[in-house]
Amino acid sequence: RVVPAGVVAGIALALAILLLARRQMSLASAIRHALRKNEFFLVYQPIVELATGKWVGAEALLRWRRATGELIGPDLFIPVAERTGAITKLTERVLRLVQEDTGRFLADHPTFHVALNLSAADLLTTTIVDLLDQLLHRTGARPSNVLVELTERALLDIGPARKVICDLRARGIEVAIDDFGTGYSSLSYLESLELDYLKIDRSFIEAIGTRAPTSQVVSHIIPMARAMGLRMIAEGVETREQADFLIENGVQYAQGWLFAKPMAFAELCLALERMNGVQANEDLAAQVTQ
Ligand code: C2E
Ligand code: MG
Ligand code: MG
Ligand code: MG
Image 1 (cartoon, rainbow, N blue to C red):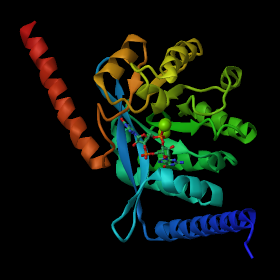
Image 2 (cartoon, rainbow, N blue to C red):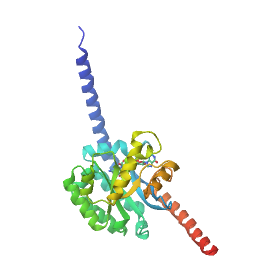
Image 3 (spheres, rainbow, N blue to C red):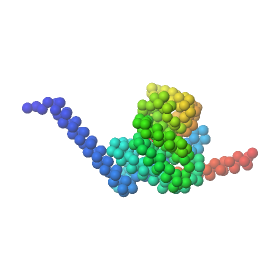
Image 4 (tube, helix red, strand yellow):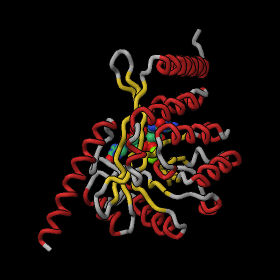
């Protein structure tokens, strides 16, 4: 007898779901293991002031190096960590890594900031505020040395998030909405939150200068953000053409491979020293020629 195709498809689907669930379970336990084995580390991508090319800050991005040498990106493990509740432990680790990496650097560089990505679960309690206070206390950094990035998804459960955002901003820690344009936030919703920065998602930057329908979106986001008093950071700027468009349209800051890829904090410090050296020489040259 022939088994009906529907039954076969049903069994195949059930198996696929089972495999996915198992994969997620094993990845979740692998994350816990990796925390114990210190397999997580941070790379830092410079945030550039478009008008001057100056590096004004850097975004901390999480990486996982497995014992096998395999490098796993956050797009793979953050969603699993979020679904399985491991994310708050990961965020704690991120804060500790920032503390270890930056040491006294932030205390010595009052205008430089490190941007941190938080998830929805991090905003459910005010523990995160205490953790950030500890980070500031232990490194001697000022609140203005830290910027917190929240995705629209993290802001969906707005009750508790609102309290955390208020607490952070009351301290002088600035808050950005990340990947803007990919979620569900309406204008009025955004306006009801007090935020400092809007990060324009890479998908819209990619579309600049192309015929894609999304190429129009930036032209709408930019004046809107400006009207709301938000400063803007463009994500994923890869070409000069994109950067010029952003400058012409009054976007102040950008991140992307055109300027720099994410790097170890020590490397970032070296690059900054080199650039400051160049800057100092240029200032001197300007004085001499005056
Ligand atoms: P994100 O916060 O939007 O970070 C920007 C992503 O764009 C990073 O990917 C960065 O490496 C990448 N990128 C930057 N410039 C360019 C460019 O010019 N071209 C292209 N193609 N890509 C560029 P990454 O590091 O893989 O991070 C992916 C996402 O994972 C982040 O997106 C963020 O949402 C999340 N994530 C990373 N670290 C953390 C963390 O510590 N905690 C949490 N909760 N999420 C994190
Ligand atoms: Mg981010
Ligand atoms: Mg982003
Ligand atoms: Mg993005």
